Length: 456
Image 1 (tube, rainbow, N blue to C red):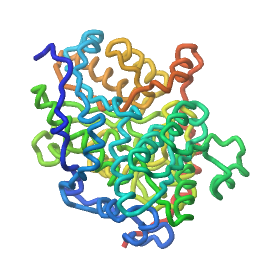
Image 2: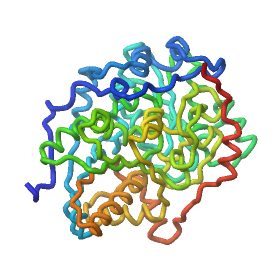
Image 3: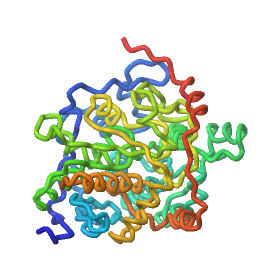
């Protein structure tokens, strides 16, 4: 068994239910507030943006929510995904640690994002919606929703953060191959985009701004809804399909993690894997389990941002969520991990961090690429820049085990491949890749604009 590399499930073992952490939280999540009134938001307030079934999932406290059979049928195209034992990485590090990774890069778009994209497209189609507007950072979410739109016959419009649009042209081409329309944000198609272009014609864009454009697009048309690829409760819910598979597969490997590591931008990838495990920590089954959320040092949302109410977008059109935030006006530096360049963090992750159930760490771009190359040269997988952040911390923790002689079990949430990120690798190998420190003055300025909220 120690030599075994792959642990797999059969298609029939794809989970039939998503796991909802809200049923087991020690304290409930703070309410989501209306952006105009500051009062707790109602289902009717969200109806212009989301189908009612997703709105119900957003606030549900039911522990298990059934996966529709049509969604499971599409999942069969790539799920269940494989759990790997990283024997070669362990050997290269000369560590007694046992390293496992759950790899989501085998989905058609190459990341974890279709787990929720397919579900969101399905519920929108069920409600009679013909078109979805969305944003994307590095392009994983935009390509995933484009794929889901092709599967379910929906028109997709994607506002892609400009710096990533320029850095990652093949992501745009993937979206177009699946029939979607992708444009750079800020764009001239919306008031939010035009206002930013007038202010700064060379603006690299941000996820917050792209969200503003997509929301504005959605509310302007009766046939259109908005879809978000991370942050919201229902998105993290859908991603638990991965964590539930991982739990079963770790049992097959006769192992349980001492440490779980993953990258966070909005939080859906990593939370999707660890929420079924954090339940064990909450109920006391595994009190010593460590869960390490890793973010870029250039956009240190959890490690540097206050826990406060903020808008999810730059223009202040979205509901206000209690979360760790750098301020909705913050434009992160142009690192290649575009999927991690978001000013806020999922309410669930922020809440768990506040309760002391999970940790957070920030890493610099150059160190993460070095770790990613080490992973490629041992495990063979060319990782996207986002999971490289987690790989860096996995290596650090494995080397600590080498120092102490402890044989800890480390589980990595690997969100996807980097096959369309070759320009980033080229920059690293040519010596052109650079680190970015977070611009504290810009964060301070952004935080001054946090909404003034008083909860009765």
